[in-house]
Image (cartoon, rainbow, N blue to C red):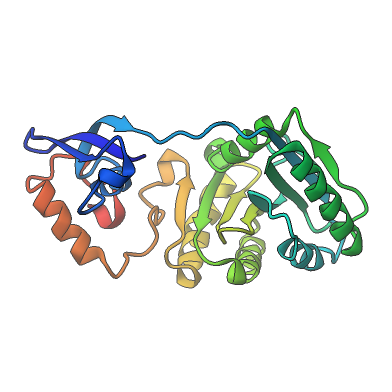
Length: 281
């Protein structure tokens, strides 16, 4: 987004950004407004920069046999043709394409010219073969749908018997965070499904139990234990009856006093989305 029109808490109509990125000066208030999720202003108009669709798209899916994940990740990192997205998925059957091997499954997405994508695919198959991954499935017509279903899985709901967390970090500590969440889920008898973003370092972790009662008993204790180790993990999806008992935004960030001051400056009477943001802002 390159520009926005907003209504502030006192009714003032304000504008930020512009139709052309290069003519914008000063603070990037558009991102501030969008990131505040309605706590600082109400968005009434937005301007977006759009790009043409790529000439070709391709998704690849590979089940990872036991003890191949680390080698597969290392080989993907060394590819000459980088994918636009690279993810390790465990679970989410029926929501995300492919089936798990013992080490989950690897999903890569490519965009560009048909010739470049074909070269990238040959390189990928060779790299994964060297890592011990015997087969890679190619999805061309289904590439866009596959990517959309993957993103939808981030916020898919299991009703009252599950919740989904997002842990931010770097690709270098992604495996350590996954192993930590795995150990906590096992300790509290919860089923864990995960999506690991090898490019951004994000970890999506969905925990569940066979029944709502079993999940309720384990979820709060799991949430406390998780935030002791990953204090800023956020809850993306949770049953309504548990939202007051879970740390939905994670522990309060160090910048919370500055965030409160900003909220007070923009919305002194607490009119806009009260109590719905980090730290109860």
